[in-house]
Length: 140
Image 1 (spheres, rainbow, N blue to C red):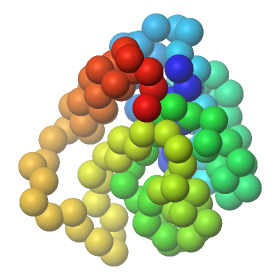
Image 2 (tube, one colour):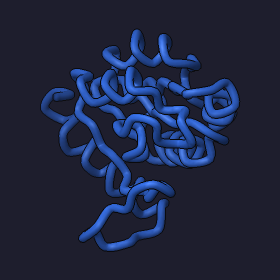
Image 3 (spheres, one colour):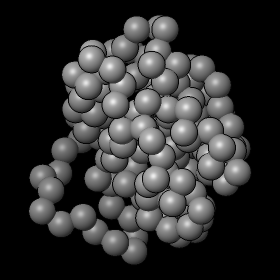
């Protein structure tokens, strides 16, 4: 099973996601750290992602390797994360073959309405539960 984690800016959310994935899933699960920038990728690699790549082209090329994609919702919104999520990145993530698990993290220029607020760690745990369930009978 391959899980891609997409993040940008300082990589803090991606780092938390990778940390929880490593704590809750078997070590043979491959985690791809796909950062909109090198800092985000580095933080996810420090959290023990299997391998990582940075930038628009790396994300566009690598995203389709993943069975699951775990990211803040901004990863599919053009110009989110202070412009780091380019339209090409947003399109690549949204159109990727993997099953997408998007965390409802508000951005300064949009708000997600109608979703109950939960701590990020609980959101990540809920996403991991979905990966476990869906991953049993095949990735997608």
